[in-house]
Image 1 (cartoon, rainbow, N blue to C red):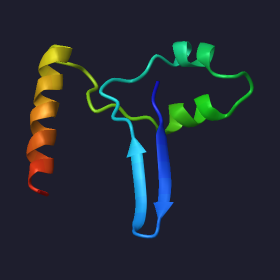
Image 2 (cartoon, helix red, strand yellow; image 1 turned 135 degrees about the vertical axis):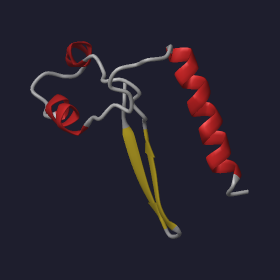
Image 3 (spheres, rainbow, N blue to C red; image 1 turned 30 degrees about the vertical axis):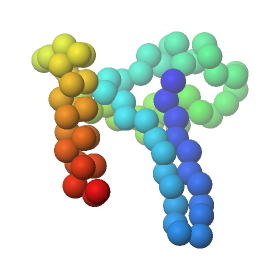
Length: 77
């Protein structure tokens, strides 16, 4: 499942979230969630997928993302 969390500290905010490559299976999520919550509707309104129509395999996409994240975060050290 997807999710996010935020923590406030004296130094600032830490926001932790998921990156959705593809749109989630909302029918499956509905089966897991408690009934009568607004969570599913909020997810449907606020979830965006990075990849709309995959042209590569999931493994190829994962490798490219890993490489890009390592490159991006290596510049901070």
